[in-house]
Length: 106
Image (tube, rainbow, N blue to C red; front, side):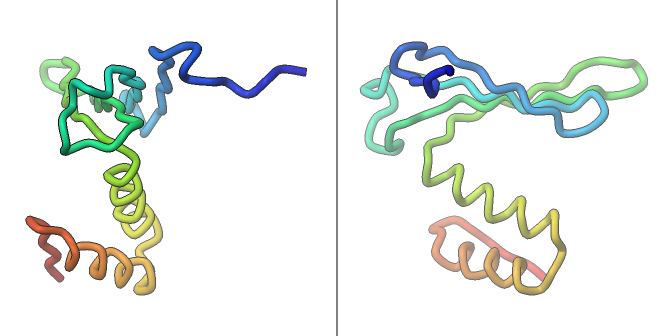
């Protein structure tokens, strides 16, 4: 029986999630909590999105820092987009009303 993985033991654990053809999101836990200042609440991850672009075939990447609250907000948005149901879209609209720089357009 294996024990649950503890990121404190392995602070550089990586989760590579496929998103589609030649598209991935890589999540890396960042253990240096003091380096992120007051804008991030631990745990903090770097998320690197990568996707293949055709003509010519090359990999484009985007890197962002994300904490648990931001990850939850992103999850709300992705669930709304994935489902397309009015109930999920209403949840996204309510979330965006609470965000300082957020915007929701129909």
